[in-house]
Image 1 (cartoon, one colour):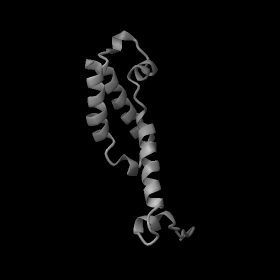
Image 2 (spheres, rainbow, N blue to C red; image 1 turned 45 degrees about the horizontal axis):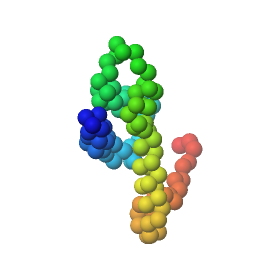
Image 3 (cartoon, rainbow, N blue to C red; image 1 turned 180 degrees about the vertical axis):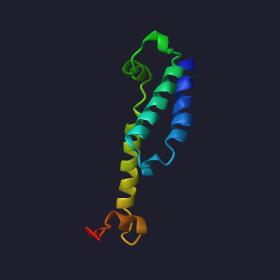
Image 4 (spheres, rainbow, N blue to C red; image 1 turned 90 degrees about the vertical axis):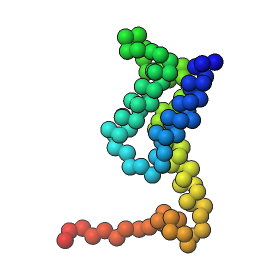
Length: 107
């Protein structure tokens, strides 16, 4: 029961704060690596596993049943895109989807 309480706390508190407004972030590879490392560290702490136990991250993720951070961000991005795509065409956010940038080459 204690493990379940820890897991629900992580899902409701830590992950929600970690991913706040993540659907609009511009992420670099280093950012993704940092987010995934923090997420994995939280899972290791929940299960009370130390580095000396030689447990692979895949096994830790399987024990907790939590999805990778990037999967959650991808789902959030798809959801916000769907909301914007269904907006009225005169709303600026919807107009930005169809924005074409005129770029000139050279000076």
